[in-house]
Image 1: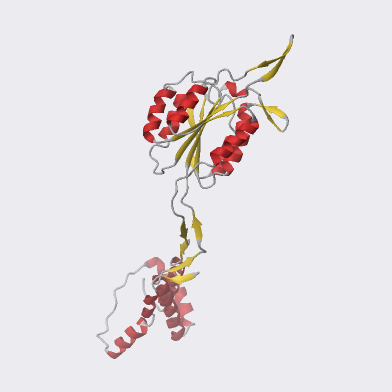
Image 2 (image 1 turned 90 degrees about the vertical axis):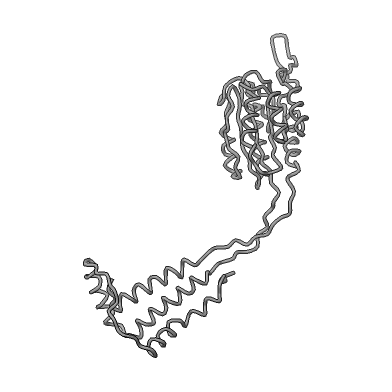
Length: 329
């Protein structure tokens, strides 16, 4: 929809005729107007004079009047208003904190009948999980021996998904700096105004390096009000063949469930155990139903300012019109 913000300015359109009538009715003493002499403009002025000589006085006045009309139109502030759009005020700031230590290479998960590593399984399902986060701000912290922000909090979910597919084992070292990773995620969320801030921590081991312990970071998390959901990754039993035959072994012996449970319970989150690919898929579905910050939806109409279009046209008409009338610049 097109409209003018200040349509009443249209009353200025007849102003040039009014001024011209007053000047004819009450003529004053003629005087030579002040002028600025520009030597290099002479060739251009001569060319304009040739064009102006071919135009009648009426056409020149019409040219100037068109410039005035477009100038008034620009002052009326034309706008284009788009269709009504519904904007949801429900949002989350969601930070995934992902363990990429060497133990995540363990192939104790299955996708499409093929064994895959823990990290591959997490990446595949996390990609689908992020698809449902459109409208949220998502980020990714990776940790092994070191922790760093891999994807800062951003509403660009597609870019976050693309970056996630490029994560690989060994990108942050072989050990597990869980406390440092949580502290880094908290640091990136502490100044956010949203009441719904969530961290999802995925790990298959225990904190064995780093400057901060998970217990120390937990105290900070409770003060900032960030809800932390933790996920313990790893199968409970896998068959292992040896010279003596097949035996069942537990590949998740180093999983520190006690710490993960404590972090979740004391921050208002939940602890989940992912022993199979189906378990992980169900966990993501559960996380997808996290209660967002509630507020009323808003409706907006996108507005595009168009004043510059008639303004440019007006300047062109007026510049050419005055030049053709023989004004000296």
